[in-house]
Length: 459
Ligand code: AMP
Image (cartoon, rainbow, N blue to C red; front, side, top):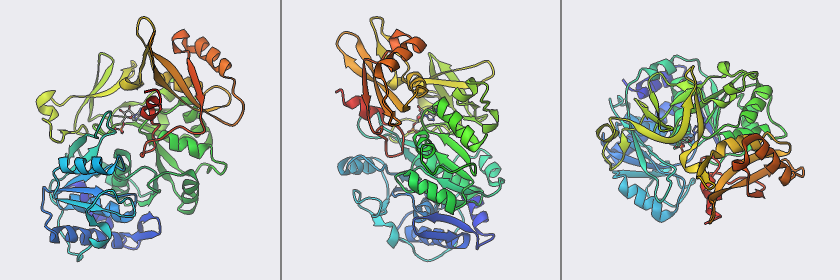
């Protein structure tokens, strides 16, 4: 039995209940079930067989959710295609992924050729789900092409646990082809929830409207999205539980969210290569204990987590098998994977992340580490500062120096005052040499602050 069996069980009861909402489309459970089988039939008629790779270049629509499910139903290897980079890179990535088929939604993008999602549905032929399938996620890619992280359909019992939770009205704000959106989609389907898909590119106005009109009681954010909602003039009051993760969450903003919505903000730490590493449940965050606002929580009981030379290493069923086209982790490192995040545990087993190792700024005559994240978190506590991102600027004398990008709340911020506060709190090493005030920070297509883009201004 896989999660697809459990989802089918849900879609086969209470057929008139709403299951999927996105754009102008609203599907009940029985309509979703019907379209799922039609899409699977369309793939089979075109020659897709169990084990085949199927690349999907799609945005956040109910049809795309069902397409992905159909590939898993057929026992395929579902390959998500990133929303960027350019046409040639995407073509190379798809070639590398060794797929039998490519399905595209032209309303999402026209950079990739393939069968059009809209033309795919065949007959509603009922099929039993295949016992195994795989999912291939694209990484953010540090240089050049994204890598392809392969996750097989390991059985952990977690699907059954999730399927026993009550249904929700869940608004997913991240792309369904990225880890967090894919995870949210699976949770919604397993719990028989109404899944409301935010647009493929997040916007806070739409969020506010959907939260109200669809009576949302659970939502999933990457931190910058949550900040935009908190800063929105019509930010909703308490009505939903929140799952947030995917990039660093500033303690000040977490506090603000809890003050606004109540003790309902859960934080998860994971990555494309290793899902669900730790979790900090809302019930364990205590506004009187600042450390509980900084930690990413305790490890998933099914995942081993070790700190080696300051880096976080992980192993377990939620860690990828390996990168496509490379030897599996089981052969190269006994299943262990270095996350590239630097962190430490406290005595009670709570994990704290200092920074991503590539975001650390190495500066000074003795090449000391400035944890950019620590600086970001501190600077947003200063008056007038809404968002902050510190990055390395190359420097002939010191190797790198700190450059700080700021988004203000519109008031005049005194840069010298900020510098002085940083030195007083974090020491001379953290002093930003340059400060640039911007209207907004650049975000990646999945909504995270794009420090790579900020750094590239100096190259
Ligand atoms: P991605 O593979 O694009 O999902 O990015 C994963 C990276 O995002 C991780 O390696 C972390 O650096 C960062 N990240 C994810 N969740 C959190 C979190 N809760 N707090 C801090 N950083 C996070």
